[in-house]
Image (cartoon, rainbow, N blue to C red; front, side, top):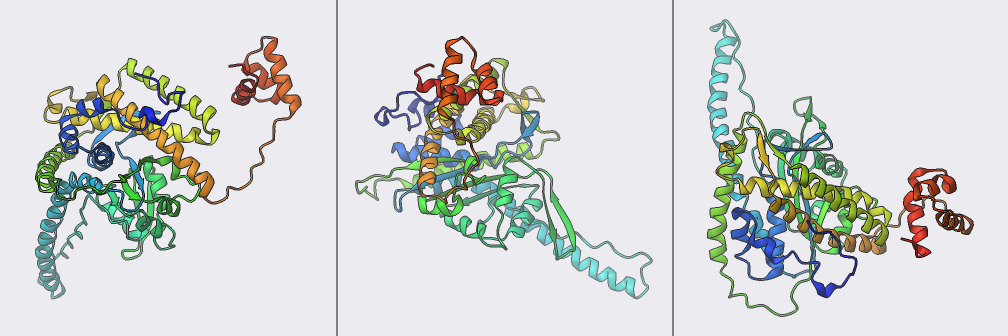
Length: 449
């Protein structure tokens, strides 16, 4: 596994692009639809959108992370100027269409049965009221509103209800980011807290006035795919201190300055092909849905060590090169990579995973490497978004951080010359072992690595 975030920053080197060989070795259900897009930016955009959509279509599939069970759910934000060709994102949504229609059809059939059962209930209730029946009839349960895609233009209570009725799962897919942002700013629609909690599957609860009942979503599994401009991003995430900033993975779309031929694309071919892949993903969805116990995802011991090394390096690089404020973002970039690896692995085993160890499946080195390289590219985009929010977002509240004095700097230098470790220097100068990174940065100013 290669180290992330190369020290020598040169935009011409293409470090912001997903390596072409990654696409060639993706699982078939992602590789084939991705390679339909010949334009590099469209292909990358489709992949990020597709990963976001598929992340919300894998029920009963979990991995262990910090001792907790995690699903595959991801939050994606595609940022570009108006008219910069975000159309490939709509094709990514197509991958979930068959599953969405399957759920809608299931809800329709349940509604029809409910109407028949309700009529029978009312008939028997009338008989009971007349004394013709000894026992009162059982009223049928109200049918659930089943769907895969949850509309962003809705209220907080409606989102909670839809999650509850869909076993905690759903996808918010919106090509205009301010549709969600506008709802977040309304008292009746503010479900920013839902987004923050659902990212880590934390339990949600709400009170449903219609039935006078408390409702809990014990294990929410929400995925979010948004696109919009930087202005729309600011409405959703006005400052880096907002907890949503580190929960999203960002893809920056530069667009094409040339006017492109609108007739050269075989959109009809895209529609047909993606309908086929959508049906395949429906079969995977149903197979996972019907499992009696969740399918488990595992990393090998070697992969675990490489994973920790990869993100240890990334954290140090971002802390030293960008800001300490992004340390939390790196922690969440790691879980993004883990979830992407989960997605790639189950897609690669599609069709035969039930024949394998019934307990679960182990990630391939190929999929672990691809997940980390994809997140490596997205990490660069996150640093750009960080800088943008620093310059254009809401002013951050002043902190009580104590500035390092010249005497403290000199003491750090002298203690280092005496052979002390950064840990010892942190204790002697600042009285806190957690200040060792501060010591490291001070010594770097003196040319000591």
